[in-house]
Image 1 (cartoon, chains in turn red, purple):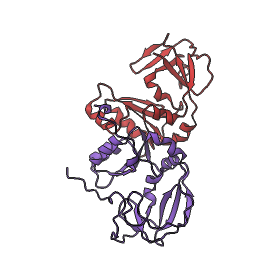
Image 2 (image 1 turned 135 degrees about the horizontal axis):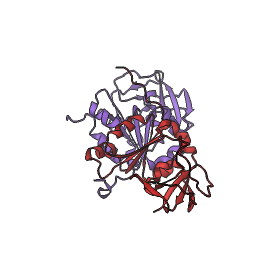
Image 3 (image 1 turned 90 degrees about the vertical axis):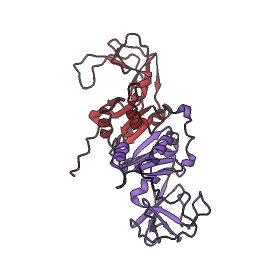
Image 4 (image 1 turned 90 degrees about the horizontal axis):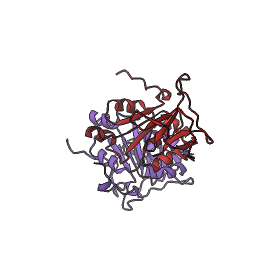
Length: 175
Length: 206
């Protein structure tokens, strides 16, 4: 099994551990993701996005509600405001040996404290086409918050990335 | 559940000799979308899929125009809430979005959606003799109609974004179509004859 690290930089010869974004004092690490999670990272780094898929423990009700209308196994929603940035994105997938990485949690994330020399690098290519080719259902939607809120109460596996960059919630219209 | 009453005109335009009720247009100008930039006169004619249908010029009002921000032949499933939609269905289908209109297309059409150059012809509704079909923005005229202007629609995904539409690029439209047939939302299923074959039973998730 290989891991992947995604970057907007094309020519990284040696990946160096970095402190977490937004926490310069945090422990420097390199993050890698398992291949079956890679499609969540075919996006500009700062792009807010919400992804989900079913787990064996997902209830039939949730499966019907969230995935009953699609043959896709994974749905990823992004704000349509990011359309132009999605189309212009140039991302690179660095393939890494799992040696030296340890798993964090259960969701296919791995970290290491050591510098890593990538096995190779491939451009992700056109993001929309890549997602299509991977069988993902991509939703370009005005706001991620309704889906975000619905998933929090669900039994699906979900990922909500860079939500701090999401447009604010629509103001509630008084009845 | 009471059976759904389908008030849309039958597939393939309106029957020859149809009586029109003369309902006034819903907006002063109406639109007709085409991939042909050079139409100077619209002559009434049967719809492409049914040569027997009444010869008419078709147009759509502004509010429903995003349904046509697509290549003409692109299969698509569109849905939105009606006042008569059940709260359960609205919650089920639209609870996950702020969009008032959701349009799903096959991912296979991505390149054609990006590459298609589309033109919006504008008609003066009154001068063109248009009447509303009271069917979600659809209008028809029996007259020869001269457009008042033609505009480039521009990048279709951008126009859909700017119209506040949720666009879904999905492997197959058939599961959504099947679900909507039993729902109380309004749906428009356009050019489904061009859709990829439904996934076979063995491919269906259980």
